[in-house]
Structure formats: structure tokens, C-alpha cells
Amino acid sequence: MIVPERSKSPINQMKSIKTLVRQTLLHLEEKYEDKTEDRLQDIKVFLDKNENPYNSPTNRYAYAAGNELRTTLGLLKRIQPHCITLTNGTDEAIDFLIRTFCTPNIDRILYAAPTMREYKRMSLVNNVDSDAFLLSKDFQLSAQHLLNQCTENTKIIFLCSPGNPTGNLLERKEIELVCQSFDGLVVIDESYIEFSNKESWTHSISKYNNLVVLNTFSYAFASADLRLTVIYAVPDVIKYINLLIPRYHISKHTEDEAVKILRRRFDVDKWVHHLLEEKRKVIAAIRILPICEDIYPTDTNFFLAKFKDADTIYEYLLKEGIAVRNCSMLPLCENCLRITIGLPHENCQLISALRTYE
Image (cartoon, rainbow, N blue to C red):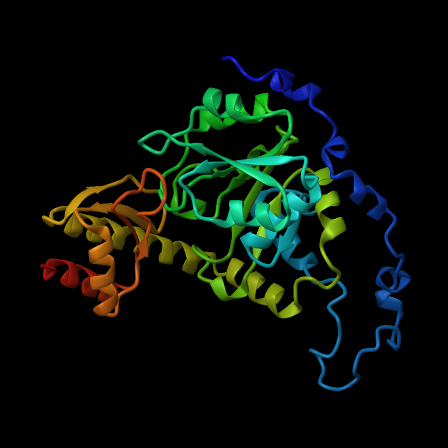
């Protein structure tokens, strides 16, 4: 495989994580020392944070918020808690990664398209240039072509697998080649991995120190309102991201709810099973409609369907009180709608509306 000159080093000769970090952030390594947090078990009177003593328990800052959740996730994923950090949603995770590892006006990111706008949007927010790598017509990745599109300033590659809005998994062997050949960070967004029967990339972070994996509580765990995303990576990557994360960043309420849902694994598995069964039925019903031209393979709780006139159908569904996502403006997605699987009666409403469309 031909790869760019900067990417020929094998994984065991990769740059240290510290050399990838935005250099101005290294001054933050000396953080303010708060001895209170190291001696919580000994302190009975808290008069150091200007907190209001009334309205317990929400009156106090959550000193150790996230620790229980990281421990629980570590046990479930068989990953050490210091390889885990938490953010308020995936947009924020992407933002922190770019801010931690990319220098404005110098470094670049590369992301696989079609995808949703978060990667480009966060690069613009941080004044970091971005490049889109176009997947094949069947939404698959060529590691060689992607690496050939990297420049000497490409610092992070973002891959979404399963993809959004495409719904499919990228081929594992191609991602392996990217991780082995690229000397920057490779970030895999696995927001929908629980709907797939394939192994998560979280089990590979010990193999590749440049691999970062994102996961969320929004979809399989049915907790979108928590706005909680998990970043998995080697400790050095987590350490530098944590330099940017504000103190008391995740509320105790968010942590408590997340731990509760993790302990309801039987319910989560049941929900995923029901959604996959419903997806099979909905796809079968829509595929045979005259207005449907194609439905693409999917490993998620949604699917991408190509229609004869997606814009008109999209507007028609809105008038019927049904919201889907119009993806026609994205590359390779002309006349495509992304349809999320809902409750059975909601899916029936969608099918009924499409059957009566004229």
C-alpha cells in the first residue's frame, strides 16, 4: 500500500502523544492544586466554594462526579477507568479533541463523507481547516485513498462507523490500515455500535495508542436527554483532553442516571432487539413501494432510503405530522431520506403515509 511519506512509521514508532498535543496547552499541565478533593472523607464543613448551604443535595458541587460511572463503564467494557473521560454530548467530544490536538490556522482534520455536519462545524469553530474524504458508492472506506489525501498538517482523522446517515459499518481491515499507517489520531465515532453484532473498537485502544473511540448514551441506552458521550483512549490522550474539561463538568444527576441505565442491561438489550425487529419490518414494507428506489444496508436503529423525489416526499411527511431527515444535500445521498425506527404505531403511521402518497 502506498501511503504519504509522513505516515510510513509502524505503530511502535509512532510519535508520542505529547508531540501531537497543541503546544500552548502544555502550560496547563500544572493545574491548581485543590487539597479538598484529596481529603473529602476527612472534611465535615465545606466553606471553600462559595456554595449555598441550603437545598441539599443540589447545592454542592459534585467533587467526584464521573468516578462511579467511569468505574462501571470500565467493568462493562473491560477497560481501565483512566482510559475513559466524559463529555456533554458528541459535539463537545469532537470539540475537545480538535481543541486539544489541533493548532488553529496550522493543523487540519480529515473526515469521511457523507456524514453529518458536526466534524466540519467544530473545525470551523476552532479555526482549523477540514477536508472531506468521499467514501465509495457503497459507503465504504479505502485506507490507501484516505491516507493519500492526508497532508503533513493533518492531525486527526474522523471516521463514523456505523455511519450517520449511511447506517453501515466501515470494513475493519481498512480502519486497521489507517490506524497502523497514520501518525496522528484516528477517531472512530461508534454512537450506534450497540445495534451491530460486530466488536467495538474500544477493545483495540491498547493496541493502537493513536486510536480514540466515541460512544454515547443517546441511542441504544435511550438517554438522549442526558447529553452524555464517552471518550475511550490510552491514558496519555485522556490526560490531555482532561486539561480542557472544566471542573464539575458532568453533574451528579447525569452520572446517577447513566449508572442506572447501565444496570438495566436486560432492558437495553430488549429495546435493541425490538428496534431491530421493527427495522426489518419497516424496510420490507417500504422497499416494495413504487416511490422507493433503494434501501442501503444498515447496522443502526435507522436506515437510509432513496426515493424518486425525496424533497417532495419529505415535505409531504411533514404535513402529515411525521419528521424524517432529508439527506439529499449530502454527497452520494441525492434523493435520500434517513428514517429512524420508532414505536410500532409510529412506524405504521409512516408506512401508511408513504403508501397513500401520490
